[in-house]
Length: 286
Image (cartoon, rainbow, N blue to C red):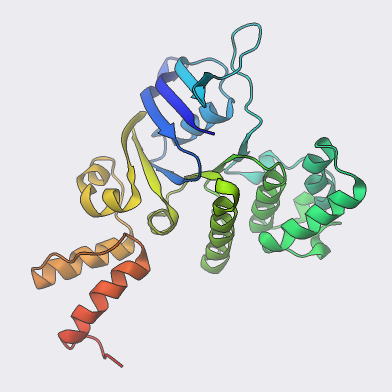
């Protein structure tokens, strides 16, 4: 499924939230969306899910106009999953088990099938069966986030939108969750739209990055092109470089040489930079 916006604008109470946004979301990509608070990221995501019924412009899915109701308002898109920034906004059942069972039950799964899919999804999001009898309000913020993600994954969306999915998680849990999401995305050519302020995570996992500033889409590049070649765009949007890229730029400045790297991912950067430091005696080569 390919999602396309053409000249989309959204206004709230006289304030422009999005202005003339055009972009294409290709299938099978991890696409991160970055920008300062209020830049338009969440509004953009809500448009794709169909949560904003009235807007100016065109929204196409596989070159077909998005379905609308009899009053011309956009309908919610069922193939798009959405995990909100605050998971308590979408957890509504009395137990974790009922929360996870909701989506497969609506899809006509039998009780046995529901148990099977729940058993499969829990380890993927780093949780155990012991959590199933608990009420969602008894969970920590990180646990709520994992349950919210699991409940949406059980809907089998083609496009999964995640609004700050790692907020409230410690670094190890954040890395585990992102690796799980990357594995899910690469299965069956799925698509992830990842809204985040963590530039290191964006550089590490993204195929492409969309940059918003003041309600406008100001850039859409593959991740390495953005972070290695279009740094002025990030400066204009008041966004920092990922720390590995900052380290790369520092070494280039100190050595006076351009260092060619395969990508903006941490491993690729350190693979090129560390031998240079070792050769200069700055790091023990053993």
